[in-house]
Amino acid sequence: MITEIYEDYIKKNSGICFILLGNLFNSFMVFFCKLLLLDKDFDPPIHPLHILAIRMFITYIFCSYFLWKDPNYPFGPKGYRIFMVLRGLGGFVGVAGQYCALMYLSVSDTVAMSFLAPTVTSWMAYVFLGERYTRLEAICGATAFLGVIFVARPSFIFYGRDTTSEEDVSDGTQEIESSSATLRLIGTTAVLLSCLGTGVSMCSMRKIGFHAHPLLTVSFFALITFIVSSAGAIIFQLPLQIPHTLKQWLLLSTVGIAGFVMQYFSTMGMQREKAARAMSMSYTQLLYTTVLEYVLFDHLPSPLTILGSTIIVGSVMIIILYKPEEDEDENLDTELSLYEDTSSINSSDSDK
Picture: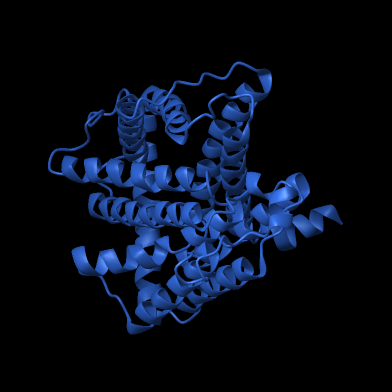
């Protein structure tokens, strides 16, 4: 019976299964980063820039191990290096904004608002790359931003009051998300900057295309993130916090391992599934993070957060479901060429 289930359901939908696993490990990565930020053994608390610097240093070392024979390593192919830099800087803003938002927002709130990134990317691709941007995408993008307002609950809209009740603060909710409308607005701004950075990064990768090995763009992103994070920590005189307990080392290691596994499973899934279906599966992260927060922190999102998250997810789902057929055909051709080019790269590497 197990064999039949595997053949009939799992094997036929292996791409979806890989993507679901990738989303699960991405949720683990963000969640364990939140646990690091909440660890009271750090005095003062560890800053997201330190977490980024350590994680990306390890990532760059691993990428260098696999790329040291690549003729374009480490600066990338000539003519595309400016886009490599933009990919790295955009990626830094994307991940740093998300990590900083975790200081003031819950994991589920941060993940929900990060779903604005596809809409922002589509608009930037229209402006800078001349790609198609439909009226439906514009309307749904504006509607999704309305959902962000419900999640952020800024004081100048919600009567100038803090948005978490005294009862919530007394039971420890403030450890999961800030009760201050001002701090929530700062966290929301960080997420919006993260979406802009992701848009720059994605447009840059689109421009680079297949002129650089995928791991090369990852290594460039990791190197720039490490440099900028370290420089930021020095400029702002952030006290360096090195893990000094087994728990802290385990959390930091888990963030790195979960990030690597997430990238591996997501890549496997994208080789087997259309981009539209893959994007639709990304919203399972909301389910994962909500369950994790409830199990470990006994924390459930507020009604306004649920409403805002529903608006955001619903808006992007409409874009996916009602995407013009010609765009889907074009994406499928692009994905097939991606698979063929990647296969040729791998085979040429194995022949060396």
